[in-house]
Structure formats: C-alpha cells, structure tokens
Image 1: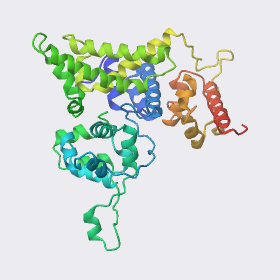
Image 2: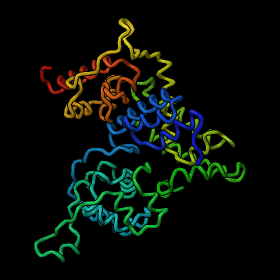
Image 3: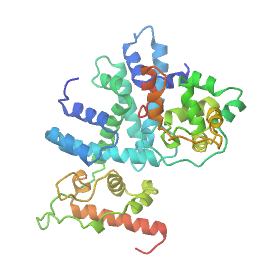
Length: 186
Length: 202
C-alpha cells in the first residue's frame, strides 16, 4: 500500500492505525506529517471523546473499548441452550464459531471481560435475549469442564484464563474465520 | 435476508458486494444489503456521537450514513475504497468530520496557547493540579453529564495525556489548543465535580 499523501488519506490511515490514540501515537503521526499536525490532533481528540462516550453508553451498540464486568447471572450458556431446545455445539455451528471457544466461554476459561460485543450480540439474537442478560451470564460462568474434574482428584484446577483473542488464534478455525472473530471487528 | 448470517460477514465484504452489483439486475438485493449496512452503521455511530449536539447528534449520524450510502452507490466515489478497506474506521472518520463541522457552526472559541494579555507562556502545571487516578475513575462514571470541554479533557487524561509536559510532548493543552492554565482549570473543575458527586467538601 502506498504512503498516504492527502490530508484525507493521512487521517483515514490514522483512524485505521489506532483505536484510541495515546500521546505517543499523536507525537509519531504529527512528526511524520507535520503539515497536517493540527488536523491529526483534532481528530485524535474527537476519537478519544467518541470512544469514551461509546464506553459510557448502555450496552446497545458496537464498541471497541472494553467495558467493566457485568453483574453476574448464575445460569450457564449450556442451560440457556438446553432451555431453548438446542446444544452449545449446534449454536456454535450456526454462528460459524469454533465449538471449543463457545465451550471455553461457558466454563469461564475465556476471561469474560474480553469476550467480544459481536459474540454477545449474536448470542443474544440467537437465544432471543438482551445483550445485557448475555453479558451477565458470561460474567458468571462457573461450569467446570468434565475432563478437568476427572483429571484432578481434589477438584478442578483451573489453568490461567485466556483472552478471547488468544482463544481465537489458538483455535482450529481457518484463517478467514479467525479474522471474522478477532476483537476490533466491531 | 438473514441479518444473523450477515452479522458473520465482514462489513467490508458487504460494501464491496454492493459496489460491484449491477444496477438493473440486483436492485432488490442491493437494497437489502444497504439497509443492513445502514443499521450496522447506526449501531456503531450512535453511541459515539455527543448527545449535547443539536438534535442529540442525530443529524451528524444521519449525514454520515447518507454519505456512506452515496460512496457505495456512486461509481468512482472517493470514499468507496475506504469502506471496502475498513468500514467502521471510515465511518468514524466521517463522523468526526460531521461533528467538527457542527462545532464550528456553533462558533466555539478556544484560548490560544500563549496568554494573550501577558504574552507569556504559562508555567508547567504542578503535579497536584492533575487528577488522581481515583478521581478520574469516579468522574468517568458521570462523563456524559460533563460539558464538552471537561468531558474531552477528562477523556484525554484517561488516555494518558496530561495538562503539560516538560519534554514538549502532546498534552491536553496542545491537543485542545488551549493554554496550560486553562487545562489545569478544567482539571480543578472536574475535581470539584467529583467532590460534589461524592458529597464531600473540596
């Protein structure tokens, strides 16, 4: 891709390069494009403001900024699926996501605060629930994986939780599907 | 058209498909895909627009979406490739353009970096003028009730900017084209708002 040249091209490149520009990002870009420094700063201020506003909004849209953990709900995703007459495996297949990742969300192996808004939205639509309800259920996942319980006589020894991104990258999905499910798609 | 299945596709793919469609044969399908992208754009843009703008910012959101639709439908439109490259970031860039236009129309004035009365560059801020992390976190809880300049100053602070920087880096003052003194005053205003929120004396 050629270097951006016009103001519009530089600003678009800036938006793509950073989600929330820190002081170092702005310093880098204004140094590289001093002729557009004022515009870059102005866009940076608006970007930071917009992402802060999006984080402050109730969970109703697509956001790129992680939100504080939701209040917990003691139901599990598996129980929700069963109540709706389906299974987590079928749900995973229907939304085009690795069933292992859905299972890891169910057990809490994936850190709840890193689960993407896209997954919560699709899950809410699928089970005809609100995004907030799904967020609460994900935040409260405590189901222990059966295999881990068999392995440990003293109870499930939980390994280090992973982030959603780590789980997607380590999954057996093909590269295109991984790209669809990585964070910042929304 | 199944919106759930479209949710699993990247919006860039859908934008590209719309741009490639034949006017005559695919008009119905193209309309459905456009409706989907309109809704997705609205979901992304609405939480990001300042509700203190005229009409709660709806005009800015609608203008941004209208511009997106034109970019996808008009052959050779300058923004078309941008929406195929990164749909949401292109939307964000255009929303910033709309919001800035509205602010200019509202005739907001900024103070110069140099004090116009004395011609002096204000001294660097004292560390006690800055918010503590706890104060910033508390203030973030009522972010949307702050004025635009206080809200932006707080958001910049939480993103790592400070009132001034002895090494000449980017600061709240430089980013908002105001004096260091003004940025410090905003921090003090926010501190007072935090104290009031907690029902404590400043």
